[in-house]
Image 1 (cartoon, helix red, strand yellow):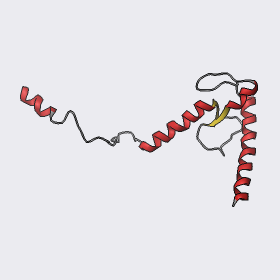
Image 2 (image 1 turned 135 degrees about the horizontal axis):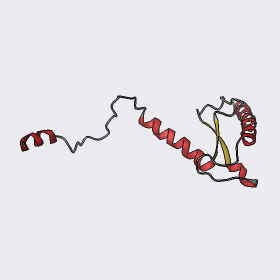
Image 3 (image 1 turned 90 degrees about the horizontal axis):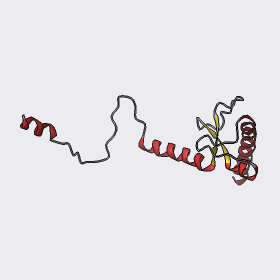
Image 4 (image 1 turned 135 degrees about the vertical axis):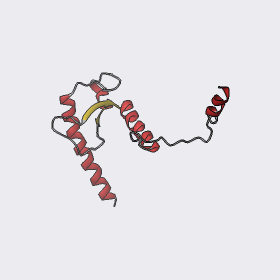
Length: 115
């Protein structure tokens, strides 16, 4: 089991090196979110983010990649995790309410009484 995990990790690292090297040749060494520039030893803090979150989708033109610093990359994935936990809101659909209190309950009746 340990050998299988080690092999999978090696395979992932090799694949990541390949698309990372390509992305670093194609794009300026700038975080696509915060605009921070990278060079020298700090270049290791610039990561390749897959826009569709599929690490196997690596088109040669780099259209599924963007360079993000470690902090912005973590933030990107955290935002998606939070959004997924709330569920997807479909157009025209109702958002699920998480509260039991409605401050406007009975307002329509009160307005009718004022007339």
